[in-house]
Image 1 (cartoon, rainbow, N blue to C red):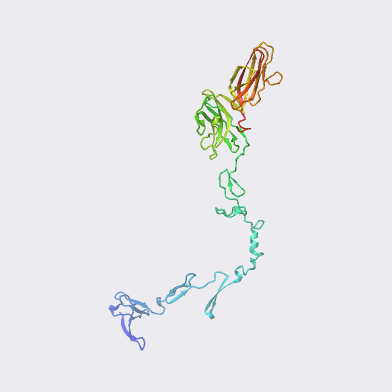
Image 2: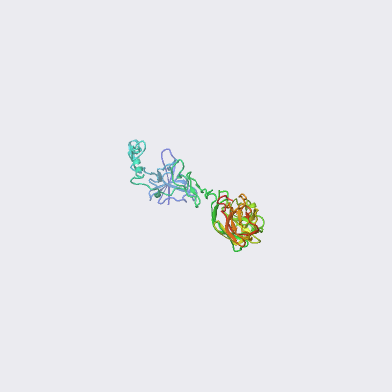
Length: 456
């Protein structure tokens, strides 16, 4: 039970209510029991003193104001400022606790200057390397020697492959003004590194000599009447500026309009006609590199399929009646499977133009024979000549003869090669005695340089 007493704090103050009890006050010791703000409560058992700061009913607040009490005064401390580390730690009762200041290394010293009430912090200049204070930083000093140890021939060389991989950029590229490392490959197999540091495709223009052609020989295909197969090979175009390579054999149809690829039509324009010579051309698209084959008349050779810009004649095909003449090709030599009896006539002393089954402007290969049918004992001879030659009458003394025969029923024969003109023609002219001489020409092929010399 609490006993209320009153006593003066000093001679100028009023009496202050004072309570003595064997227990501490609680929140229910309030104004309803007659306590008010300022009442002092003395616990005579615990020897503690309490001070009422709020007497609200049921919520009274008493503060322990005994010496050494944990509550202490209401004031505290804090760290201020934007950066750094604060030295205030906490308040325990009435004790404000602060952190010690400690040196983090031997380079710093912390000392208590009791006389001046100061904490002195100092830095050891001998322990700190600085450009302005350390003699080791001049040209002959230790860091320079250390760098030398990592260079070529040094005691601790650093290799490029021991370093981390560089960034994916151009910082280490060589240039015309600086050494460096090789730049990153662009990939692929069609470019090379130029002296200016750029990757570029090599120029192949006119790599093949002018007029160059290799293989690209022709043959009759399974559909012998209409199809021609061209073997693999290469050539330069007829302008001498573009290489053309046929990597795989290709079969083209002369009786169908041109379409790209093997077993497709090959006629560049118009319909196939009987008794006509057709040029066979290798053609190329320079934008894609595609190489193909087409058939054309000489008059239409400049008409190429869309996007094809390069061409080269690689041979001839003779269209007879609804069929191609069968042949065999070995290099520049073309041999007809069935020789063609182009001339069967009686010789005359006048020059006569004859058309042979030989491709235009090639060297015709033919056999000729003559048979005298007169009983007169006199010269019988015939000369075959190219139309670019001067027309000259043969005689027994000028050597201008190709074949000859004797009297009646004596035959002369020969194997002859002559260049025909663009219309496949040659000339013949005979020397005969009284009577007549019969002769025949059988063409079995031609020789075609396929543009090696003239590009035609």
